[in-house]
Structure formats: structure tokens, C-alpha cells
Length: 178
Image (tube, rainbow, N blue to C red):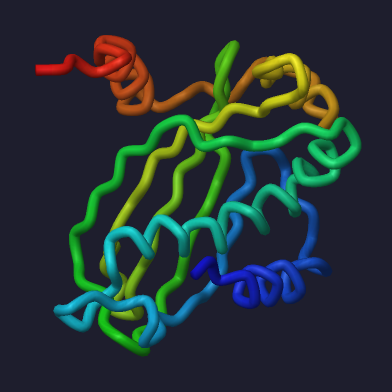
């Protein structure tokens, strides 16, 4: 089940947090709950993706993106992701999540998020590509950035993000059927 109450809690505790710039980093804290674990008593890999929502949606609220989406009746659809899982997160363990919007191109917005253990180790890291969608299809992110008050070009994407974008463009779609 989607953690609606946890999301509402995160939005509630961060609603008075200072507004972030488009490139600002949102920091939030979360616990691995019994319903988040797998058979090995650690954070389930699929649930990890859901918990990343608990950082990304408040980030979107703090940069003003949620208000822009509501005002224009647009949506935000995840269009791709690359995840690295490096350290186990055990039940009741507290993690710090860092979420930020990295850049955008003519079609997608790119987010980076990571979960950090209290030991200071990075447990996992994700790069997400999202499309802002409207009734007529994908909305140009530059238009969205202008609605957010950003009047310049997109922040320069890191080299590794550019490489991921190029590599993903080589991937066949639809996938081959054998």
C-alpha cells in the first residue's frame, strides 16, 4: 500500500520550511518500518522507490513545482530511473534523504536522490527522469522553469547524467521480443 499518511506527514512538517531555489537540496528523515522490509528484514528494493517519493514530492513543493502543476492542471510522470543499492537499511533504522533537481532538457526534468545511514554511509542513490504532462502531452521543462521564476538556462547536468541520457537513448523501445 502507498504510504499516504507518511507523505502527508512529510508535506506537513516541511510546509513551513524555507522555499528552495530550483537547484536547492531538500533534506528529510525517515525510518524503515516493519511494512517496508523484505524476507531478509531489510528495506525492500521496490519500497525504496516509493520512499524516494517521500523526499521528491516535498522537494517539488518547496521549489514551487507543485503549485505550478496544480495551477496549470499538469502532472509529473516518472519516465526512467537508475538506482544503486549499496548498503542495507534494516528495520527501524533512521535514514537521511537528500533530494534535488539536477537539470532539464527539452523533454525531461532530472532528479537525484540519496539515502544516508546514521554512520554517514550512502545506502542508495537514484537518478530519475520525469516528464511534466498536460492534456496535449509533454510540457517543455523550460516553460515550467519560467513559471517557477527561473529565467536562465537549465543548470549544467553532471557528466555522468549526460552519459546516462545518451546511453538510455540507445536502448531500444519497445524492447525486442524473442
